[in-house]
Length: 272
Image (cartoon, rainbow, N blue to C red; front, side, top):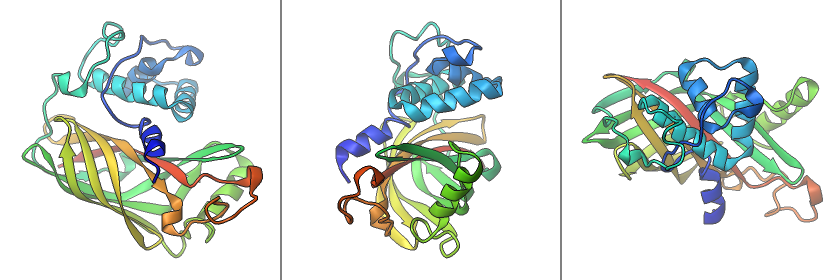
């Protein structure tokens, strides 16, 4: 996969966390820290939630700042006072995650996808079926995510357009969800960048095809027995026999071409 594409994509989910401004209840004026503060406190109106998600999907810098501000909010920092100076996750006075095995709470976890084409992009979600992560000595020892592929949804369309695209993505042109109902990401190794940030290398299986990938994860403890994971990775769909309208395999596609790389972002909650 082209490293520059991967870097751009992964700006959506990770890296050093920082804060970028205050907050407002007006969805049209929300900045990254405003969205983060409302999200952490559970005070978002439907209008604000929709606007924030739109901005996060559309702007990699906004998403990176949002994730930085989420961490600052959880640390109890006043985002309005730290908005000028970027803050590294290693510099925040947060405890490391306690050792142990954490099971992910499927109902409270989110997996989102973003795909692009010449004429625009689409985004949606897929439900987590199950998963776990094991911490030992302050780092990730093992883990896995089981993804429930038939739950794939499109969130930027409605009505017939939504139904048509969801059906197409579940078909043999894309993910063949009837035949391959599960995808799996198995953690193999992890490199700790600090006590909260990890590069996790593992095997991703889609449509029965397994390829190595690296995900960037930020992990923050929630109390004595919980954790929150944000992060993500980029995928080259053609490695998993998803060739529909790929310029690698078809010429003269014009504005019908679909990008090979798509993004997965993770928002997971776990408990011992």
